[in-house]
Length: 284
Image 1: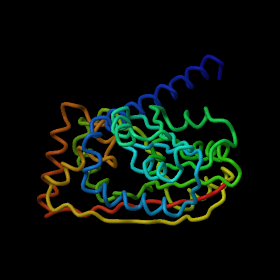
Image 2 (image 1 turned 180 degrees about the vertical axis):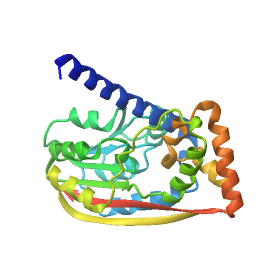
Image 3 (image 1 turned 135 degrees about the horizontal axis):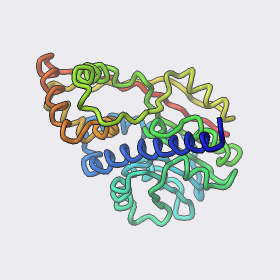
Image 4 (image 1 turned 60 degrees about the vertical axis):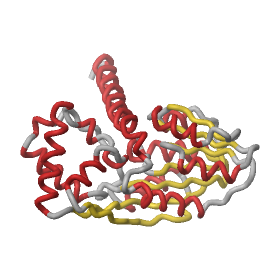
């Protein structure tokens, strides 16, 4: 392979990754205003609050919240570090960050930046951060690379906390949508990859390779029932877990797909979805 061929392959990979992130960014931008009111938000937010209770805090800590969204976790962390501490939230969606900034507008220790989590970590000095969190966002980046950077950036003894969906999360919805896409492949525009860990074993391997120590690592799950297709579709159009799916559809075919989903769920008398995810707390 010539040098030119290698450059072309690398350029195509970079362009593909930019396209992937752009799809997610647009979907999160459009759902920002309704993100915190989604029917599943309170349920999933409870796990965020629970994992934050497991961490150790002190005044003056320097913290990073990756994929901070509307600032739910950032706000809680900020309440522990005090005015002489620092909490930096990074997210690819500027619309989500606008809500986060308004949420913490009276805080002197919270800052927000529109940046990809992996790029943000690579800009940090080694051994410089006391706590790094990533809740419900790691699968939209490159988990193995992010964890390695987390290990580099954390101070010795620094903490990391992660909530990340596995590939089996929402498998009921995956099966339903897959049937529609097989029947009507013309509705697809592009499918961005989601790098959710396949299982706890694969995630443990990534953590070990990153050089992080495990304090807590377990599989969790929770369920949400939708009694009608209307409720499910309304949730899918605004929820975080369906980001990327909306952007994967051709714009003039989205209503067609959502009508099909609505029709199938109504015919079945509803649907129950299971969120399957990993709960990880570790140290350097």
